[in-house]
Image (cartoon, rainbow, N blue to C red; front, side, top):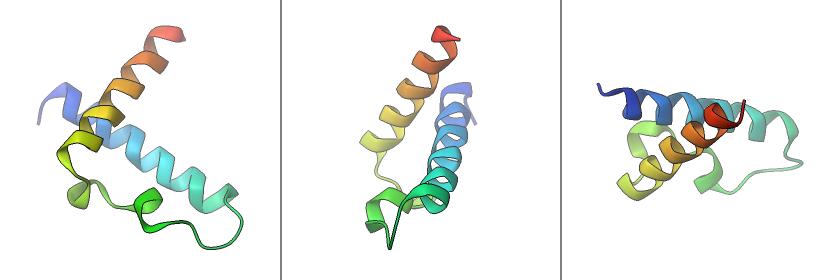
Length: 57
């Protein structure tokens, strides 16, 4: 698994945990879709977001 893929997975898992903890009611399925079921374009976006957060910190 590449570092980019792993970073995207880490971000996605943190995102899902946050949604489940803070989102009132039932979240949209797309908000909590597991990594293995996430479309490739979304996976790349998650990896990009992780990298931007990492650079900002």
